[in-house]
Amino acid sequence: MERIQDIYDSIAADGFTPSTLQAIDEYTNDIENGRTDFYRFNLPEHAGLCTAGAPLIGASIVACYATRSFATGGHATGSQGSPANWQVDQRQEQLIEQWARLAHLWVEKSEEYITRHFGPMMAQGAESKVYYKEGDISVVKERVSIYSTTQKALDAIVLHNTLFPETAMHVVGFTRDNDGLFRIILTQRYIRCLRLAKKAEIDALVGAMGFKDNGDGNGVNYISDRLALEDMHPANVFIDEVSERPICIDCIVKFVDVSSAPAVRRN
Image (cartoon, rainbow, N blue to C red; front, side):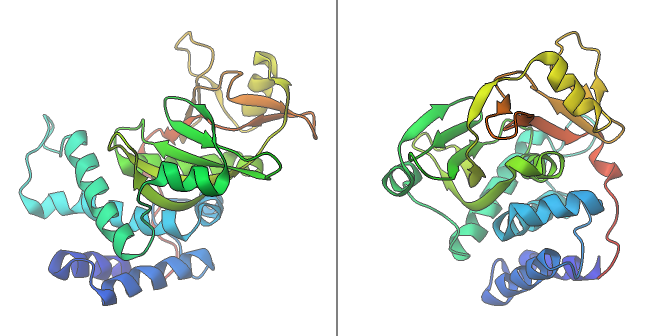
């Protein structure tokens, strides 16, 4: 933990100076190349982290610093003595935006830019705006957080990649949309849908990964010892036209208990 603590100390002392940006880049590079691990994730999840790309890794480092900064910053707290989620989320967004601008990962007027370069918007849901140009192998998404904090939204991409590598998400930048909402820009393989998956097929898909129905009566939410998997309804799980197997394009996934994430194994 010494190395990441040095980064935290540098941000606290001087903000995102060139030397601090370089330290984040070097740490990110070592994570991507398997020379060290990020303490939030176990070994299988580490593969999902690397697939998500350097922008997500860097943003996760900054988000973790933002959360830890409350311990010494004298911020107001929630009922249990910890920061309120809205405060943590706001702080994470602010610092990630500062870092992303200096790291040349911030996209202004992203909706216009994506439409011009990657095609028109083809779908919009509660979480994502989806852009696609006919013939491309990938879609581009502007993904807003529906999680309590931005860090959990970043975690969700890592965990999706871990569980569903065939539809892995690769983060390329960050933005605020025309409504001022913070969004993560990512690419994802375009899936040609043969049909929507049936519940029995979804049950079998997640059951093979160790998930069971969480018992809330909705029939689309599952749980394992470590992760919660939600919103697994047929609109999010297709039968792939090529493989003719169920394939998840999107869902809600989070740690059952984030504090259970393993410590760094090597430096």
